[in-house]
Length: 137
Length: 133
Image (cartoon, rainbow over all chains, first blue to last red; front, side, top):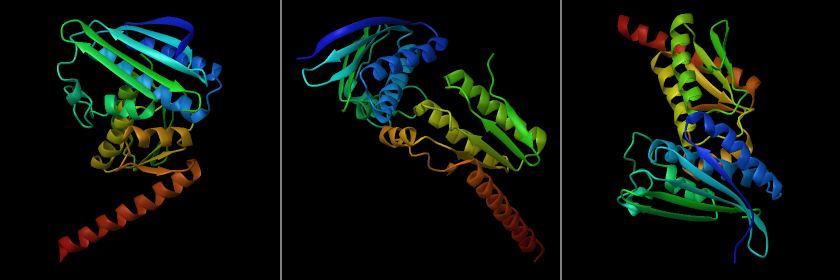
């Protein structure tokens, strides 16, 4: 059972929001006592997802939450956009697939960097990606 | 618009990235560096990323681009000072930066750059010899 200890919403509308957002994620990770490697993995994952949010979703919000699963603390990030959605999720999760001109590492690479990864998308309504990184995960 | 300064030192260009990159900043650096190589006839580019705490797939791609573009322009490039956590994260992300020369620190990077330039000069001399034969 994962309980939320604190929650803060962060609005992402332009590229300049990305650096302050990454700093907020870092603060949240530091508060859990997370080591530097897991911090880096979490912030890198967040950086990938926030780019998707801007590029494909046209901006959106990210909820930054401090969570606890009964054994340890962690950080949960929920990225929500009201963009066009993803038609084929399994294709989007494949290494090397991209509809843009990027490397296609974003989603599958991000999944490797975090402990829990969940993506839900409805065409025409938007996409929500939830990730959790545990302190010692 | 924000820009990362590019220092000219003899035949080399020196870039120290002291801030965390966002996409536009990284793209500007890519363009500025390629233009600076042309403008100064530089033989080598050294990029110090020891203060960079995050490199994601986009910035990784830019670093790869800088390496490839410099090479096409006839300059060598070396990236130095990557933090261990950044290196571990990049590999897990799936970005191994193949084709980008790297070194542990600025000193070793300069050594590598010099030896690469000697090597490429030697090769082009050989080519000239072949042409005359």
